[in-house]
Image (tube, rainbow, N blue to C red):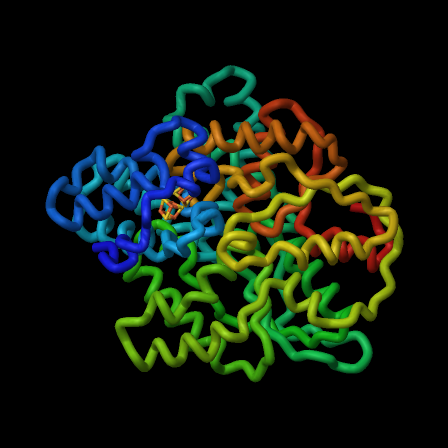
Amino acid sequence: MADRKLIDECVHCGFCLPACPTYQSWGQEMDSPRGRIYLMKAQGEGRVPLSNTLVQHFDRCLGCLACVSACPSGVQYDVLIEQTRAEVDRQHQRPLGERLFRALLFALLPYPARLRVLGLLHWLYVALGVRGLLHRTGLIQRLPERLRQLEALAPPLSWGQLRTRLPSLSAARGAVRRRVALLPGCVQRVYFPGVNQATLRVLAAEGCEVVVPEGLGCCGALSLHAGREAEAQRLARAAIARLEREQVSAIVVNAAGCGSAMKHWSRLVADDPEWRARAQRLEAKVKDVSELLAELEPMAPRKPLQLRVAYHDACHLSHGQKVRAQPRTLLKSIPGLELVELPDGDQCCGSAGVYNLLQPRSAQLIGKRKADNVRSVAPDLLVSANPGCTLQIQSQLGAAGGSIRTAHPIEVLDASIRGSQL
Ligand code: SF4
Ligand code: SF4
């Protein structure tokens, strides 16, 4: 049940409403932050049951945290929605189809080895022409909506990407300025191995020795954001135990959702004082890669990139970690690069962990607004620091037949340092 004290901090002013993507979509109070807090209170007091309708209003929340940034009273909606989702997961039985789909997603996504098998099947699906056939004949439209969304979001993988493995230790170029660990992520590791490779190269060029701890698995972020508290705790404890063995000054993360969850690990395992203390020691070291690079005086020369770049603020980086300036500063340090801001840039793209798979219609509505805003500034490249956002925006831009490419900020910096093209 959501914390009553935190609920009572909401003074119902409504300043958060315009910031909320689902309120923007439907204009319904119960799909706004204020409305959801009201529902949490009513449910906690036993005035409304935890029905399908009530759960739907909570499920429609992206967990984007735009309302946290917008709230002048400092209401901790991030904590409230986490608590509520965990309560829903424990107390509410979803329809069978939904339970099976969620079980499938969470049997795959937090496990890179299983994701790799899925990636291989997807590679065969494309390579053997099954994908082309389904699309040419229109049979794809007969698949259930969620499977269609999964198919639309999964990017084609090359054989080389599937075989990519990161070295467990990467040497710094020149004198060692920092020794750090890199979290390779789950989706990032399998679907965007180039982002991890670019991260290692940039960190090496800036004087960092990087450890990629063998056996390090999921940080628990996806499960946490979906209300699967026990699973998130189990994954977080395993990651903490593994990272504790490394003598490093920072734990570098290049996926916004992971970084945001890891910086609050102690909240996730707060019911156990020993684990809370261990989590606190580690979370103090967690840094988005742009935060770490912003702390270091740039050492590697940047070569020009003649690109018009739009930067998308991933919600769990901007609202969740308040990291807004650092990625922009990194991009602006590249000669020739023109950085443009997106209209309504504070708005979520509709990815939000697995939201675009669980709430495909809402995600498409929100994603279309984002894609329209991206197209309105006509960039060569759309840059985002979260794999989920990149997949969602790629898919939305692709659906309209656009040709705007996407990249992670670290890939842009890497191309500039190496003098290569993106
Ligand atoms: S987290 Fe995002 S979607 Fe949810 S209530 Fe807040 S602003 Fe709206
Ligand atoms: S969450 Fe904050 S901004 Fe929204 S109604 Fe409550 S006090 Fe106002």
